[in-house]
Length: 275
Image 1 (cartoon, rainbow, N blue to C red):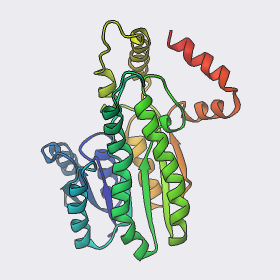
Image 2 (cartoon, rainbow, N blue to C red):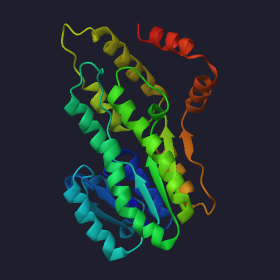
Image 3 (cartoon, one colour):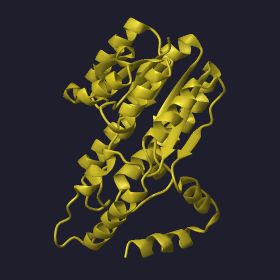
């Protein structure tokens, strides 16, 4: 039985990926920062009769001590076939008004957490001569949206890291893959919706427009299970994976337009939506 490690498995994509990988025959090490949130995954696993294939462990990807403790757990199994770096959150706010600590917090989870857990898992893959590291990016890793500068920056960093890491690890038979979902029915945007701008902020109207766009798009959000199944397809494939997998309604069209349209036109479209 192959071993799959997943970060951020308490909810959203992470929980679904854990279930789907277990159904596909993997022994799943599902990690989360707060084990008090494990009940949702446990209940879902029981419904699918895969609870015996899932082990839930504590892991805070922003804590080096927690990552070191997790390495000891990996030493007991001595094998990692698939790593899904899923832990992350979306911080809403404009670049001028977000504090440096808020930017750092965003990067600690979305970027440095991925680096730390990857470094922990790679030696086992390299020793085996095979493995897949699947990094959960976002369309924001390819396209900058206003009001999400910290989140967008963290995902752009993840994309660049993944490109380089893939080239570094290919000689050892390890694939590095980026999943780039569009808008899905998960709770990742809750932090964006909680953003409150002070009354005299020059970005007040822009944030109102952003939240209006987020709320208007809820009716068109995809089902997260689509993303989970895409991960399983990559994890179970014997072929060399592609680097990027855009997933979701309108994502491919958006990336195509960015590749062919002049930036000034893209800018004009975005500015019109923000008015």
